[in-house]
Image (cartoon, rainbow, N blue to C red; front, side, top):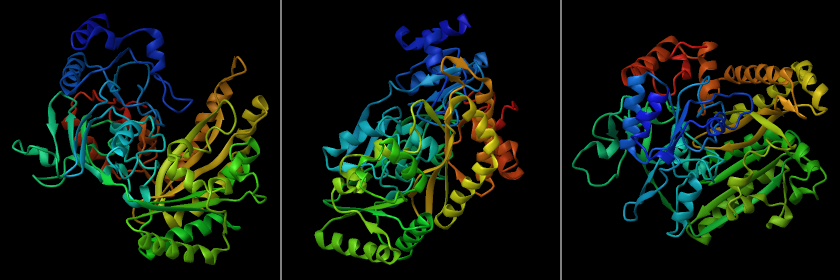
Length: 505
């Protein structure tokens, strides 16, 4: 291992590589609390050329490389599977390289956060459309493209962040550097279009969860932020999920251009309000689900017409309008005006101190999500015995349900189903039964959701292998994906173990 370290140290400055035990353990987890893999080495390249040299050495030494953006992912996406490998930390690559105001395209290094990029763009009256994931204040652009991320804001209008992609600079697992889209033409001076010059090879790296290449540079469309906006929040009646689904479906069926539409389930309000998490709703007696929308427009006339159209839909549902100001409970205004989209999205996770999320981020159709939420409640009842094992130690039962249900492009929504539980270490003692039960419950819930036909975008270690283990992929689809992987990465260097391509369990 020392020989490997010495080879890598020749590629980057010595202060950007470490095999220190404390550093390695700091990179052994993501958001989840039960998956851990300690790398052998952590390294921070500065550009595509250094990434290329690192991957060439890894191929020579036959050692795994795990790309890591900000490490905000779930399912163990940016840590090793097992205790080995090189974590390729892209945080140094956080520059804005060019803003083409004439063509409304920004080019950045892949390690920059959505928060930093949008802070820069706001000085030009621009934004990225989809603001990235709900953790976008710190989440990296490269990670968002690797996951088809949604959730941060603007998803009903712009869809997943990959919809904005124009071109990529990608380092292939064997070290070759390619560009996609308009930049596949060596004579193109600026990135301006994703499609053309042959097949859309950028699509291979969108949602690949880091298995096909390392993103180095990313060019995105950016958009002028409209001058006018309106935002309203409503307390849902009984059967709040069904009501919210009907509102979302009507918005799409009537072709209303909405920036955001979000349903916050009853469980979030009912459990979170007594904990003081939602002081703006303390005055609400009936702790039921909340629905809010945001619309944008280029004129007051356009804004009023859009507001009128959506309000006419909601008025038939017996929903209660909470008022125009944040102090009235209008979380929609805070969400849009105060950048609350990056402070609020994962509100089911963290209701009690020291509880951590075991989540399931996936897409489904609008009309499917109420049944999925009901089935999560049923799953919870069926697994009460396992839940009690944790309660017997902690005196707090794990909480299952879903965070916000977010309207994205088309008639699709994103749901953040899952449960919160405790670490195996509780009150200075390790409880193996907690760790074992957490894994058992997580796998069970994920499998349940897979069989609803949900579409997974953040897959990582755990989810990618579970899809294969339970036979969710057709043999033809899986074999094609595996053949592409073998062609690009003959030694399975990059993100080794994901999707069971390496053959490990």
